[in-house]
Each structure stands twice: as C-alpha cells, then as structure tokens.
Length: 178
Figure 1: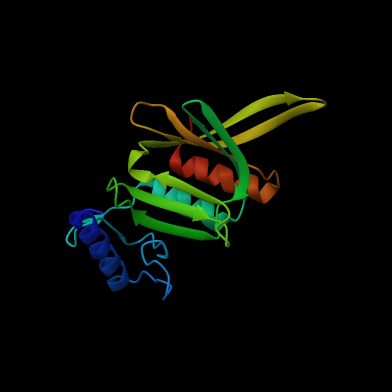
Figure 2: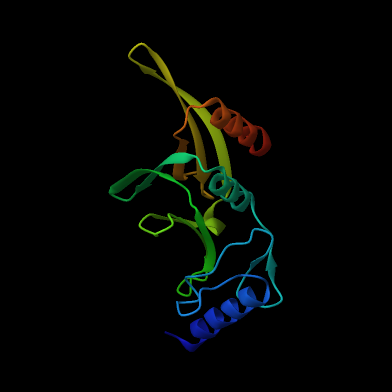
C-alpha cells in the first residue's frame, strides 16, 4: 500500500472518529464505520462533502425496511437478488480509487450492496406495468443513472402493500420520475 493511501485512510478514520462515526474496537476501523448522513467527509480535513440526492435516497431506502429486487447489469453478467437494504449502512472512501462508497448490508454482512455514489448522476423513480395472468403487475423502480445516462442499477420495490406504495409515491414526488 502506498504511504499516501495509508495516510488518507488514517486521516479518514481520524476524521470520522472525531465527527461522531463509531468504530468497533478490535476490528478494522475502515470497515467498521457507521454512516451519518449529515456528515460526509472526503479524504482531506477541510473538505466537507455535501450529501447528494443518492445519499438521501439510499438512507431513506435503508430506513424504510422494505425489500427491493436489486438488478445490476455489467459487462457479460447480470446480478439479481432481493433483499432489505440494511440494517447496516456505512460510508467509506476507497483507498485504491479515492471514490466514496456507501454500503448497505445485512446484519451478518452475508449480503452487501456497494454504491459508488459519486458516479451516480441522477436518480429516477418510475412505474412500469407488466401483463400477468389475470391482470397486470406494477413495477415500482428506482434507477441510479451515470453521467452518460446509462443505468448503473435498478432497485424494484418488492412490497405491494398500501404503505409501501405510499412510501414509493412520496419518493417519486420528492425526487422526480421519468
């Protein structure tokens, strides 16, 4: 590991401890940080990062407790899974790339979803109707879009209860739709 990367990581951990981030003693402090949406810091002590829309959306998805069908399409592979986005939510800076990451994970961390939040240019909420036997199914989708307008991932609400639908419609009203 380069000395500059090590110093950046140490500086980040010190900043996060000084600003209310909690670490678990005896574990790796860089991976044990807890996320606070009101205080996101970059690698330098004087530079505070303003929360982006994606930060707020991820926090609200985490807080909702609703399950989502997560779809990520990469070069030659597609990943689909259904999970609640949490209860663990962490923010970190990659020592390799310097990019800010938000991680949503199950309690035992057997499931982890990492988002390179600085690559998310736009968040779009949409509803798509699909015919099914005996009617139709409404897909309530949140898409994270990159700077070229491509979809980074889709998070499909996997709860059709009235409260979940109201929550989704509130998110769509606040953050926009396609």
